[in-house]
Image 1 (tube, one colour):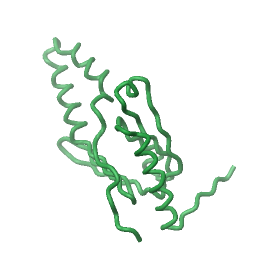
Image 2: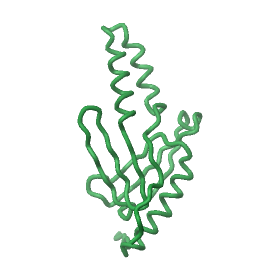
Image 3: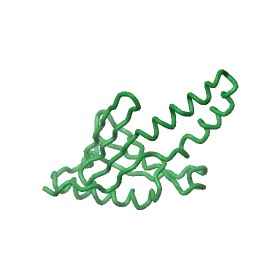
Length: 141
């Protein structure tokens, strides 16, 4: 068994919520509702922590209460790099993982910098982890 090492750690970029923040600007005249909504979204993203190791993905979410979710890398079936136009303008991308995990069939790592590099590191780590655990995927059609 290999020692668990961190590959990447961070949180989604606030650019993923750009349109939401614009909406908040329009709602400011309504009793400051837009300000409260904007602050809450900012705190939500700021406290959203994603840690990717060579064995698993650990996601911690929550402003007042925390929820921790883990996804074992050997359960990842497919990786996809998604670069929507607006995110591509600011050099960000989304990584979409299709998995065999019951609670995370489709897991998205949003708004990451250097998405191509991270996807490649993930791909290599998934293959290594599958070899270590002696996991093989079989598709039935």
